Length: 366
Image (cartoon, rainbow, N blue to C red; front, side, top):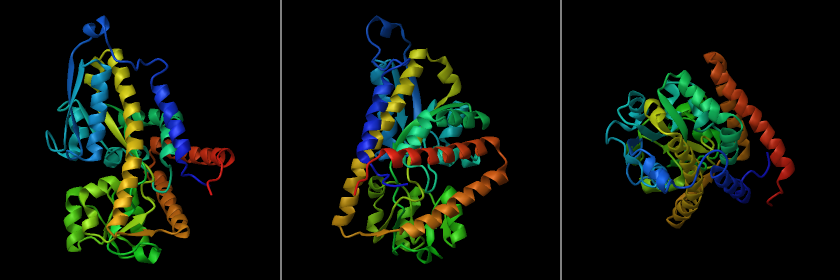
């Protein structure tokens, strides 16, 4: 597909999404007047997977503020960082059990609960932000998302909870432009991407985010992926690694999620359920566009302090895409889960259709 990075088109679609969020059967205006007094006071505890001050944690805070404002202060969600109630990766289990009412996290973490989970987070060398958003909201993805949670027997209602553009492929102490440069590399990579790279000859390691900085500093890692440029800047990886690598092959887009205990959700009046839906739409759009600007600023900063950029060639990208998709396809067939197959078929069908649409409809940019 040609010329995919079309910011103007993205913003146009995003504007339409905001308009859609305020139209139709869901009430987007604040609950005010006599009706507001008839609604119950609700207070929930939400915990995130993230530390206070991270852009990712800010997504949950943005969501909670929108819920508060739209309900005229009747629906309060107290947002807590990782570790406040449970560990950062225990938030889904805690919400399922009712220990907390809601959570914000990344669906790719739930591969152990259902193999389809990464489709709703990020697919290596596959759906980009506009494509992923369109598939999720208007091509059946959102329905498949809840089906996955139900099939995994999670007592949770799930919604999209924010979006970013591509992550940095790596902060590294060696340039990563060729396949040979990856062989033997000590690289932190979770999920599908890590499995793909093992076949390339990479020494894949899985370490928590808190251990990445000291591991780069001490040479335990040669390179790490973690998040988008803005978040990685907050982590300080540029202080202990001389290179950044792009493009974001492993996560060309990154969707997050908000989840609610189903029992607590079912107690809510319909207007509160609509508010949760609309807050999800609006926060996802806001954080997507905000993260793009923050990433531009972070990349400028890396340039200013002398961090060297390396870019994986188109030839290597095509080779890695073929290997990544072959790995996923083989895993889908080996697993035998019908939902896994159905979701893989859906994203592939959409990839082809979007490519045909984009090639015909979009003007060139160079």
